[in-house]
Image (tube, rainbow, N blue to C red):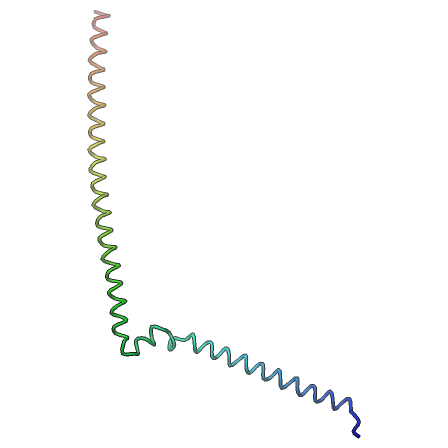
Length: 122
């Protein structure tokens, strides 16, 4: 029948390998393009929801949740601030009482010391 020619076989193998390589490159390039399109802003969940009839309801829900969070945070900060003010007032009272006690102690100590010295010396 036919004799196999080595050159022809190599040429066919080379052509088949080239076609496979080109197909793989094209496939890889198209997959990258598809991934970029999917990751684009056009296919973002928020964008897609906002285009539907339920988009406004969804965003109203999100806004009300944010409002609840901000109200909670505001009340938390107000309470924290009022507690902080009360603690500062209490610390100031404690400081004043401590100073007054130290003053009275030192004053009485001085009087007792002067009485003892006048009795010893005088």
